[in-house]
Image (cartoon, rainbow, N blue to C red; front, side, top):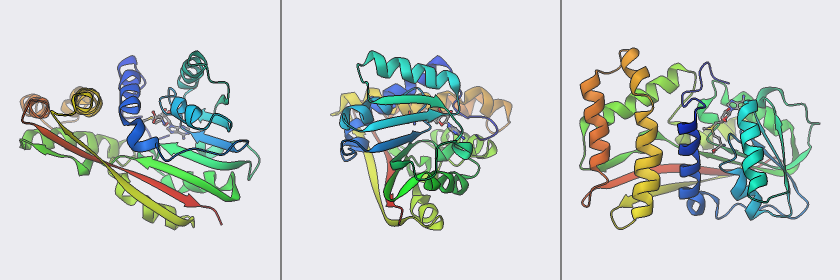
Length: 268
Ligand SMILES: C[S@@+](CC[C@H](N)C(=O)[O-])C[C@H]1O[C@@H](n2cnc3c(N)ncnc32)[C@H](O)[C@@H]1O
């Protein structure tokens, strides 16, 4: 994992991941479903926010979900079992050092993980070794540089830039979405298909105003307030102005846009 996982593992972050996942289910998952009997690896499952949808959309696939954080894996297991799914098994594991036999999986699914890794190419290579020839990898990542909104607000851009910079200092890349094609290409995946998935939010979509602009994106930026100020990236007033600017976009005349990138590629 990167030096310091920028979002942390606290309860607030877990709730944010759940909000993010439930708000974006249709946009990110509607075209992900694995055939009966296929072996699927979910790498970096976190607290299981995406695992529930994977399990629901592929009820007869055998899903193995791993994460480097033992406590996240335990939480994911609890949630998935509580939701009544029996097609997922969980284990702690590091993407760079997994002990599965080579070519054990028909499909691999990775969501919001590469952005936190200092060596995403090496991670993809490790995962590729676990994939059967003819198998697919699905990678979903955000790209904070894709954020724009109305009314525009310079302080809000500066606050977002703090998150990007902190993630970079921790070894990650908050703008990795735009790089999915080149990095999958660099590790020799073929038939790479990347689709940008834009979240467009205005007041006519109250569930996105709450679930995405407020509880996913703005909550994430608010979460780096102290570390940004401590690191000397911004002063308190500008940061708080920026957060106010982000909240301003959820008013009746506000608009907020963000683009995720979903890539599907084949091992040949
Ligand atoms: C932003 S969370 C995403 C979790 C989940 N995929 C989701 O979309 O809600 C990133 C996860 O990647 C995990 N992670 C980071 N480095 C890892 C590694 N080397 N091996 C396995 N998991 C890792 C973290 O522990 C964290 O749970």
